[in-house]
Length: 181
Image (cartoon, rainbow, N blue to C red; front, top):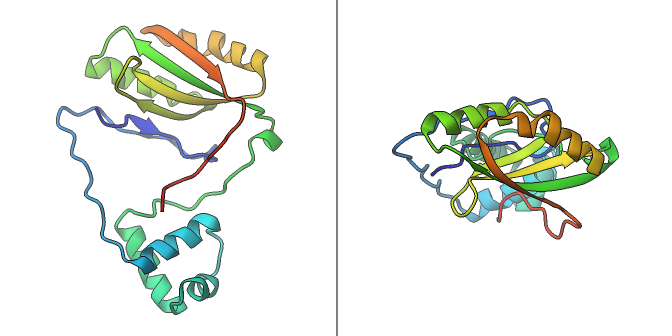
């Protein structure tokens, strides 16, 4: 089954995209890139506030050519948006919890309703509908263990249809990359 929805890290004010479950899932076709496109994307991932002159110098292209390529990548949906990468700990969100959930029902309606409700919880940073022993893989930001207990009682466990959950606190982040370029 396709990804139900995804929150992009650091997007506290952005509305989450909710995709209705479909019977036949059409995968998007990859876009063709050359080495310059990839170099531009790497520069933007490192710092999306770089000027066209800085990007051009880094990838050995003129600023005008870089601008044209960036506009094409935006139009093709490769570049979805520009955002800030926030330090959660400095904002008071000291811990990250990985939650795996199983639902009682797997109908399209149950999956949609669960996704809609989950999307309203601001602490949920990412949520995936997955295959395997669990139905959902969810990454949650919390201030501490008491905050997580509050989240469970007041929000997560009030969602109807949860059969089982398993939570793990992240001890250390070993790698946190966006896209393998």
